[in-house]
Every structure is written in structure tokens, then in C-alpha cells.
Length: 114
Figure 1 (cartoon, helix red, strand yellow):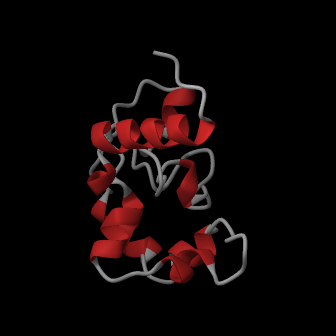
Figure 2 (tube, rainbow, N blue to C red):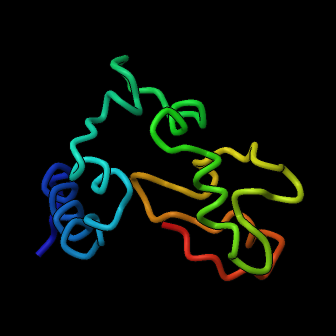
């Protein structure tokens, strides 16, 4: 049986992705569960804007975060020897897709990025 209806195929694909993803573990869903709506990070423009670090640190205290991760080895991911504390949060912390270990592009650090 051939499916030629593009809308049906798109809905079928979406259903598959939703049923196989770990959407509840993504940052956006964690924020929503705590009552943080989309506009807090993305503003009210259409299309929404991508948040910058200045947006993140309105709620997430940078100094407290650096202290919380100070004992992570081999180096604190929030005080990079390359960028200090100026690396954009979204280089690692993805809210609508799984987070990434930005450092692993060059290093073999096994950080678990929430």
C-alpha cells in the first residue's frame, strides 16, 4: 500500500517521533513542569527568539552553578579554561532536543549534560 498524502505521512512521522522520544526529559518540558512558560525564555515575538545566556541567568545563578559543578573532573564545565564562564548555555543545554557535551568536540570528557 502506497501513502501519497504528505499530511498523513507528516502526522505518521510525528506520532512515531513522539512515541519513541524522551520528551519528558527535555529541558523545555522540565521548565514547563515548573510553570515556566515559553515566553519567559523566547519572548513574545513571532517567530520566537532563541534565548541567550543573559536570559538563562535571570533564573539560573551563574556563580551558584559554578560552585555546584566545582568538583566535576577533569575540569568544571562551567568555568572553561578556554571561555571562562562566558560559554553560551545553549551550546550544551538544548531545551527542545537532547543536550550535548560541547567539550567533547575536542576533549574526551564524559560530562552528563542535563
